[in-house]
Length: 118
Image (tube, rainbow, N blue to C red; front, side):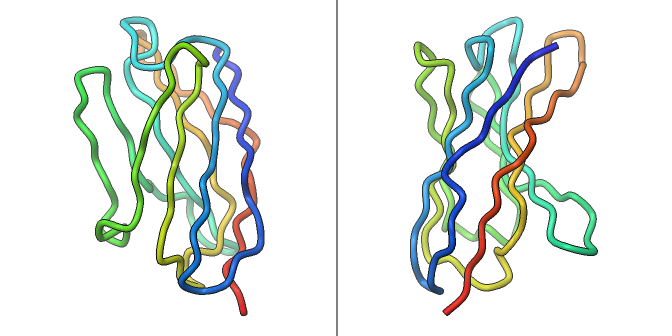
């Protein structure tokens, strides 16, 4: 099982920016851990995809991202990041780091809360 730990969630004003971090117990985007990314869940809502990236560099973003968010990584640090800009109140949610192993096993972090409010 892959251990994931998110950080960086905070209260931010509309239009602001935030960078979330996720540290994994294994190096991301390798043959053992080929897919990582981010999901979010707002109160009373289902968990939804934000963005994922594969070891081949294929990135998938949810439609609501619309160019506002970027996934980056620091493999030697076992980390991926979600840079979020132009945040909106509807982006308020608990954000979860996600990792899928080569065997197809999905792993989740405990989440980090992002609140967008004036």
